[in-house]
Amino acid sequence: MIRLYSIPPSLYSAKTRIVLRAKGLAWEDVPPPGGYASDVYKQIVPSGTLPAIDHDGFLLADSEAINEYLNELVPEPALWPEGLQARAQARFLSRFHDTRLEPSVRTLFAHVDPARRDPVVVETQTLLIAERLAQLARISSPSPLMTGEQLSLADCGYAITLCVLDLLNSGMNLGITLPPSLLDYSKALRTEPNVAAELAQYEPAMALWLESELGSLP
Ligand SMILES: N[C@@H](CCC(=O)N[C@@H](CS)C(=O)NCC(=O)O)C(=O)O
Image (spheres, rainbow, N blue to C red):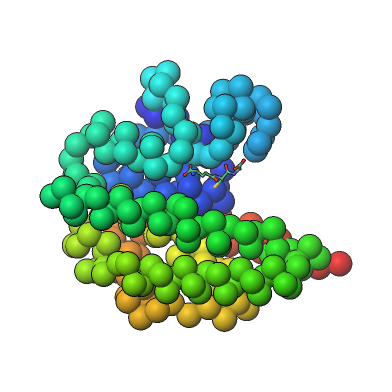
C-alpha cells in the first residue's frame, strides 16, 4: 500500500490522488508526522512539502515526480499521450501549471482571511492570475482535455487549481472570468471520472478551509 503524506486542503496532494485513482492503486492518506512544516516531518521528507509518497520504503516528494513515477509503475492506462512531440507538449503544459498558474493562485491563500488581507496584493495577484489564464488559453487547445479525450498527467494540476480558483473567486469576489476555451475545459475536467471522484473529496475540504479563513473577521 502506498502511503501518501497529505492534508485535506493540500492542492498538490489532490493532484497526485487523481493519478492514484486513475491507476487503480490503493493508498492511505497520512498527515505529516509532527504537523505541517514540522521538523519531525522534514526528517522523513527533507523538502518538507506535501505530497510525498512512501512506496515500500521508497520516499519521493514533488507531485510531478510522483505522478511520473506512478505512471511508470502502473503503465495502463498510459497518462502521457502517444508520440514524442505530443508528450513534450503535455509536459510543457503540466509544468506551466506548477510553475506559472498555481503559484499565482497560491499567493492569495495568505490573504483569504479578511483580517490579514492586503488589498494591493489581492489586486496585483488577481491581474496576474488573469494574465496566466490568458497565457494558458494561448498555449493550449483542450479537446476536450489537455491532450484529447483521455485524462493525461497534464490535466491533474489544472483539475484542482481551477476548482480552487472557483472557490476563491466567489469567496473573495475576485471577478476573474475564465477565457472561453478554459471554461469548456474546466467543465470537461469535472466529468472525467477520476477527477470527479477526487473533487468530491477535495472540494468540500478546501471549501471548509476557505470558510474558516473567511470567517475570522474581527
Ligand atoms: N512543486 C511541489 C509543490 C508542493 C507544495 O507547494 N505543497 C504545499 C502544500 S499543497 C506545501 O507543502 N507547502 C509548504 C512548503 O512549501 O513548505 C509539488 O508539486 O509537490
